[in-house]
Length: 293
Image 1 (cartoon, rainbow, N blue to C red):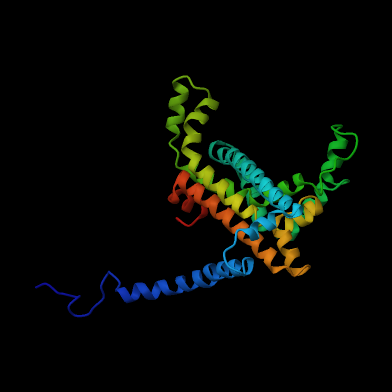
Image 2 (image 1 turned 135 degrees about the vertical axis):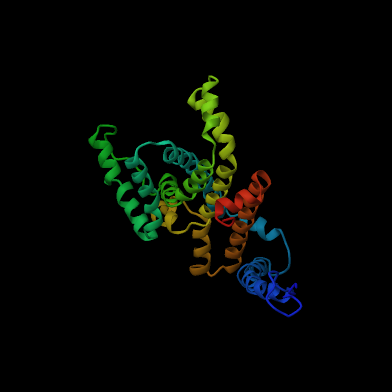
C-alpha cells in the first residue's frame, strides 16, 4: 500500500510559493532600503532639476575635483595591478613550496592585514615611511642612499598603504584557483621542452586568468572608496574622491557636489564590475568575491 504524504498535508520537499516569497521579502527590503533608495536620493540631490548631464560637466570643470578623480583611479589601478602580480607570486609560492616554515610565514603575513585595525595599519606605515622612519634609516645604513627619500605624503605612500590592506583579497582567490590546477599539465609542458617560466606562462596563467581578472576588479572597486589611507599617508598631495566628498559634506555643506562625486564612484565601479563580468563571466566573479561559495 502506497502512502500519499502530499494528500495528507504532510511535509513536502518542495516549498510552497508563499514560503519562497516570505524568504525573499527580507532580501528585497534590504536591497530597496540600502541600495535602490540611496541611489535614487543621490540622483535627486545631484540633479534637483531633473536629469541634466550639465551637472556633471560643471563638476568636471573644477580642476581640483578633476585631479582628485584622476589620482583616485590612477592609484586604484596601480594597486589592482600590483596586488594581482604579488598575489600570483605569493599564491604560487604557497602551492609549490616544500618548506613548511616558508608557507607558515607567508600565511601569517597574509593574515596580519586582516587582523589589524585600520588605524593601527596606517600609523604603522606612517612610522615606516616617514623621513626618519625605518625604511629610510635602513636604506641609509646599507649605503643605498645618502639622504632620506621623500616617501610619505606622496601617491606612492598611498598605493603602498592600500596595497598592504587589500593584498589578501588577491592572494586568496588566486590561491584557490591554483589549488584546482592539474600540475601534470605543467610537468607535461616541461617534459616537452618548455622552461618553467614558459610552462607557467602558457599553462598556469591562462588557467588562473579569470581569477586574476576578478580579483583585480574587486580590489579596484574597493580601492576607489578609500578614505583614511589617502588622508593619513597622502595628505594634500594625493586627494581621493572620498576625501572631497567628506569635505563637501562637512566643511562646505555642498551636498550637490558630494552627491555627484558619489554617483561618479558608483557608476565607475559598476562599469568595472560589468566589464569584468563580460570578460570572465559572472560565476568567476562570484567565486572570487565569495558570493559563489
